Length: 210
Image 1 (cartoon, rainbow, N blue to C red):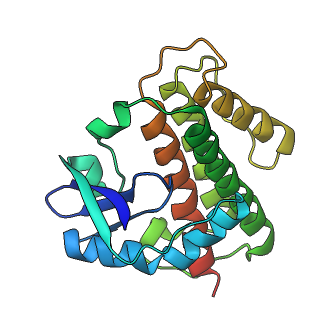
Image 2 (cartoon, one colour; image 1 turned 90 degrees about the horizontal axis):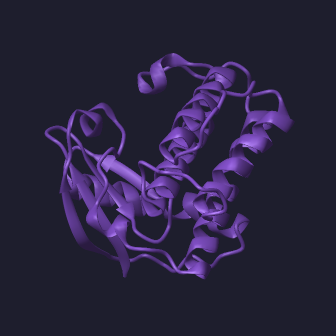
Image 3 (cartoon, rainbow, N blue to C red; image 1 turned 180 degrees about the horizontal axis):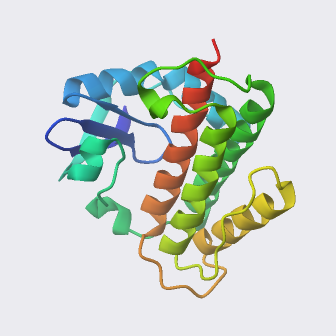
């Protein structure tokens, strides 16, 4: 049984795995969202394998919380913080969730190298090519870092591996509580939102590379 929560807007519903950040999919309604989430199990297993974690077979989902979405939900992003995300994380679950985020970053770096420069065009993502998608993810992460309470965050050049690694290290440090910050986002939500955004675009690039 996979523990999930739902975020439902007027035109779109997101369903997210509570303990597996980044495994989050959307549909026109609850049934469609759950169906899509389960369809992505094998793709998410690549992430968990990369993180060195064993992903259980989902089979069925259990919805433990429902939140009302807003314009952000309907636009295409899980933007509401569920109540369960305000609960603290023990050391090992936090380490596992950070490992999954880091695995997501690793997959993005790999797909950025292996994917063709020009992607197949379509409605998703506004027709961006590979480098533009990667730049969008990096720009968003600089913004997300500010929601973690980090200051003086600049968007690094996506091709500057050292600057990108430094940004990610600062994000991980904030998630682990290694820096004194006043975060807008609780850790559970932050790591889930970060991993979701990375993987959503990893899968976009993969889908548009064929």
